[in-house]
Length: 357
Image (cartoon, rainbow, N blue to C red; front, side, top):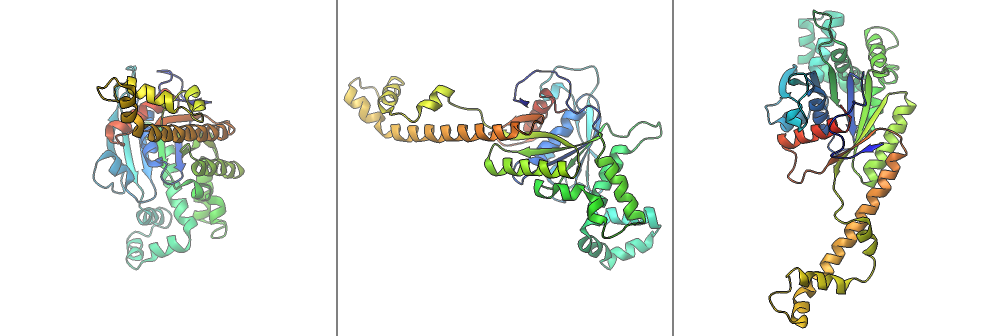
């Protein structure tokens, strides 16, 4: 089920009908980067996509090279298929808007919506009530954050059409994602009736519906893969809709299978001969002189080959573990030059090619 970089230029997306894409992953796997890339990929057919950040890190602004995002939906990018390295389609360019959810502002908005507090809500903010409420009752905070994303996914304009074709949430890390999304159980001890309880139930109806998919980002390394496996088990147990697995920073193998298998043997003479034929032994044609010149290079090269073979084998084992999950899996290449805006669009193109959008 794994799809690798460079596969078919056009294919049907795997998540037809999904409007809320929740992206999580172990810290350091690049979940914010892939959430942004997924938003671009989803908008490339002329759609309108909202990219939401809930952790207050302003990672989206940093990725797109813009000023810190306020608590309002703001256009940050336009995108078309050709910009992603894909053949032009029938539709025009799409657009990505972004929102950094501020917990205090979200709670004030909530208090105004359900309790009509108005200026009183601002007064509560001044005396520190908002910070107190969201610290003492973190379940309330999660209801506010997930509720904002669910509202955006279901929002309609005056013409009755959905405001956004898709919403992508850059969510908390894998270790916290199930608790973050499972807001019903989080607020059960706080409110069994009333607006908070009603809001939590409304959020759960969206989160458990076919319109939502929770995607996990990982690396081909033991700890991120294990955390992904555990996270998917927790999501399934909580009856939350599991999406796909995005394998980030995949490095192409430098040696073929035969070369990897041959690393364990004694190949000093073969390597010395190859280095000499490549001209690394200097201009001399004397075998002794050539051998003396290439000798210092042999051990480091063989050590690198062994390390590479070990990495290839480790990655093979991790792929096997991911395949056992039986989920759509997408492999994104390691960008050696780092992820700038051009790299972000390249990753979006890979996601589009492999059917993630």
